[in-house]
Length: 538
Image (cartoon, rainbow, N blue to C red; front, side, top):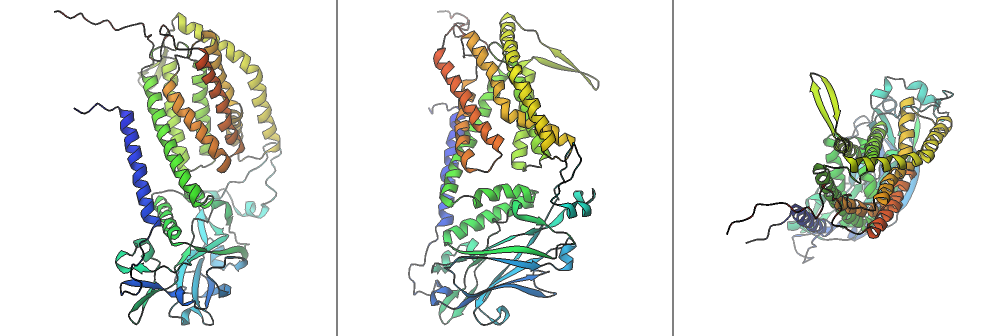
């Protein structure tokens, strides 16, 4: 008979299989099988092996097929695929583009000395230089009512109705790549992702493929976008080029397809930008490390969620648990969710935050023993009674909150007053949410202290959900690592380190108050309370 496996063991096994499968898929992407016999007929040889004189030309057009005319904005003479460069050019915007229209860039790699349309061996790609996004609402000082002095023209031209429809934004970067290695492909094992970018012609019995030109769409970040208005006659464009390895090209193609698929499922440009930042701001080695660490972070998150739900589902007594700490976690989670909603954060962050808020509300219902009775459409809330042990825990909790309020309230009010005077916001609601979330981030760890105080008074930690707590602690240390390398607000970065201090104090209390079988565990019973079963007859 097979031993009975727990649900946690099953999840860990599935997770390990997923990681191994992902590693195998990634290996298949970055490794391409070369042609074993270079002189065989089934080999496709590179055009760059003959070291031709090349030229790179960039044109703009209102349509992707250049109908209606095109304009040359840059020509790179004596283009060398192995030499990176960066050029800053000013692009004149047509009248249709300035009126919330689009503009395309046509990139050609062709023989030097001739135009792209005269070269039969030219390669080209078309990409958009504009994209549509919702305009950012203007921010004002709530005390003086003064607008942002840096953008007076845009505020005059954009009324309240313009904020509800997407407007054209300028992509200020155009990143180009060409595969520089002389790789010979096997015709029978040609990767499908490379086939899209490959142009082949016959030279006698040999098949020759032209340079593999690639436009890096992942480098187009939201922070580099510029809103286009009727007064924008010229805008700057940074054209950067660098060679690329074949394995990295294939990986980048798959990542661009993944981002495009998310946009087809309803993700906005800002949502896709969150994913782009993972790939653009880090190198491939650190990206691989990020994947493995993020995978374990996801596993620990799931296990912590499972054990936390199991703990509160069977929780019958609040002995040794700080009810106000539970209430504070619920309040802070809701505030953070409203803040992310006000900042129009990515759905990748917003959806988990909303689910977490609902779970915290359920915990408050369990902690305060709230029963909801509906009389028609009017709910009635009934609170359960506390026993003597729970009342004693409540007294410790109240005493801890009394001492804590002497420090917490002045700090929060002072920070909110400073922000009201010196920081600009979209509305009073935005100021309230930002003030609350800054208080949560900066001083939220103080609300973990009542639980430490209750542990100290009761000389016990047996009532805490230690399994869920340890999984969350692992994730806390993972967050510490990424706090140094991932772009995030300073308050959120500090919030990652504040939990470490409290966690270390919890561990110290765990060592200081060893397990006592007479203490109540997380399910409201002690180890000495053996279940009374019926005696068996001989």
